[in-house]
Length: 300
Figure 1 (cartoon, rainbow, N blue to C red):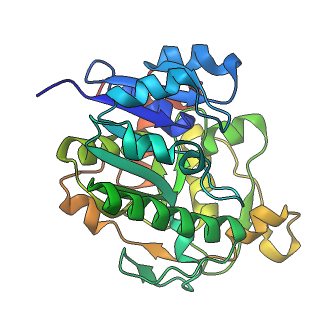
Figure 2: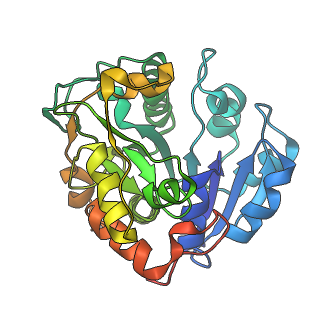
């Protein structure tokens, strides 16, 4: 079998985690909108390319050799920016393409008042950004049908990991414990996004997958657990109704659901961090919780 060439449109926090976890297993290229971020992509194990909504000759050349295409770029009002720029190239000039993966969000389900949802649940998005996500998912699935290639939709819950977690927030004084009765969220460690993505790439597996942990939990509990690990006092609880929040932050609390993950497990993936406690225990013990995005995680 020829070596995989994986091309990631929008190689941000999750894309860099994927590249770090799979260095040497494939050729990995990733795009960014800023040349200043090229070095961070290189350190993560990617060849960096510039993508600001226009398809360059350099990107076109890379796509011709790409076996696995990953999209981690948010949709816009004009549609999916990658599809808008590269649809013709994907359809006509990607002879090696075997599989497409699209990183979406569990926000597409909207609010279920704390009930469990799986991939068969109706998408009833609340926010405009989630409405656009649903449309983008459908556009990528349709493209896959047109070209006869499997498309995997990975619906991610709240992303955390080195440099982006409650331990960091406690240290820098930004942690808050907002309390809204009965509110829960799922989460996913970036290493589990990387692992689930690799599992689907390895099998050229298509479908819709919730990539999320096993333990939907109140957000204030996560902060309290991190504070206990650090041996510091947790910040005081703040009633949700009294909290000063941005419209986007407030909108997150308007969606309450428990997200099931049986499908990604059925595809063969075993979570490295099945809940936030396991992840925080590991990050605290290993010391990698403070790590910047360019640092490698501990060996598995």
